[in-house]
Length: 143
Image 1 (cartoon, one colour):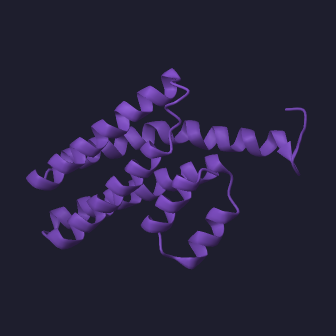
Image 2: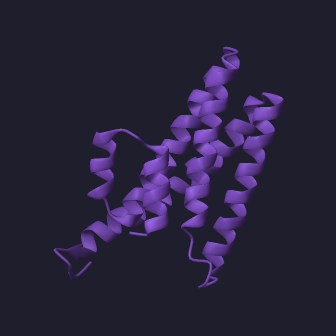
């Protein structure tokens, strides 16, 4: 597991049970949990925004931005794969949109970022399932 990703995850999540799940998860499993956490934070931020609970809105948007930044810094841009470069740009875009959403109290911008995360999440979930079925006790099995 990428140590920067683990550090970022620990900063975002302080729940001991969740930390235990993280330490037992594969790297792609952690990415899935991060996506799910960001989506959950955006749902909560949207509800808080509509209820005019701006302190909660700000906290949840900040949490989502921290998660997205953690995902971004965990990318291996030294390899410069198209996927990593595209994800980097997408994560930067998401953070920009979340900043604007927070300033303007715009639930549509929150929803836009949430939909982007929800669109990508199934690919990570599938990858995590594939990795889990092709590796058993450190040895590679037939897929």
